[in-house]
Length: 416
Image 1: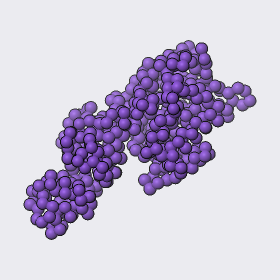
Image 2 (image 1 turned 90 degrees about the vertical axis):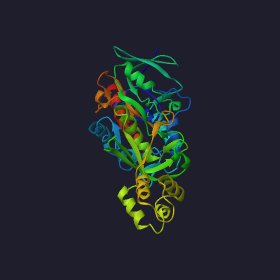
Image 3 (image 1 turned 45 degrees about the horizontal axis):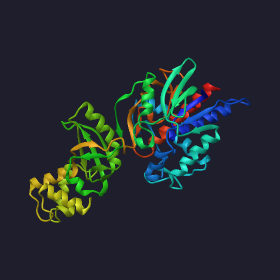
Image 4 (image 1 turned 30 degrees about the horizontal axis):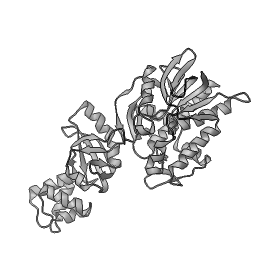
């Protein structure tokens, strides 16, 4: 049986980063002797599929300002403790030293100056290889068992025995890339639980068939999306660009609130979503604008803030004339529709298109100083397999870098 000291399962963002730091730590701490062997396995024929599609093919490496408030899942205090171990400045330094300069855009997102995700993938592979980590693929893991002195992992390329195992398998999002939930099954097989419900995160939402918003397919504009109880109590609101699609809604504001809606409805099926086409404006504010601009006509007033196509659609739905006087009831209906359009969401686009997974191995089951399992010593975790998911904007990558750094360094230190 093939043996290794450290086995990293998954060669995506978290896995490659983990391997690089495990290798660096092993080389730095082992002196002149033979360093621990580090083997990375992945079931994909071509590595880094999720990296290559991230950020529209440009790879949003991180965000200029990251805190626990940008994440959901496990407790903020636990997330903060891990994030502090590897900061945004550390990320920038790592990639610059690897030959990948980053640039900050107006949104705060950091991209490689090449605008190519392949630059990031090639740098990660190079750094892991330079740190003496061996990368083997395709080699899909099918089972993982604990033994008296470590673990035995079954793969379709043959069994492997390892003293330490680091699961960097991702969650269930974009299963074609290899993150099909297999790593979660492996974690459960060794006694770990999964935070429930396990749902897509950063996923487009689907409206009931034929809803008028689907007729605006292609329209992009800033909005605020609000999640509330059936009694109207606001639970959460997100503001940002929104894209109308032929089946529903997408864009940052919708993607950011999607996981919260999916999880909230498991506990309370009556929760609602609404959309404000005039972010920052209340229904009363809009009504006042319509009154003040009555001579101009309702459509003209709305065109100051939205497209003509949307302005006319809202007027038609409210029964308000586009020009001329607007009856009070129609005006109030228009103001309410413009600032709080009810969204009859019937579902989501699923894990096949989701950018992340909500749910996973709870941080309560992991030693945050090392990312080692509290249940199965010698087992470590990094990345999306854990119950941590960030909002759109590079936050999930920063979690991969931070948790991978901690796990890789700790596993290698224990193996020295």
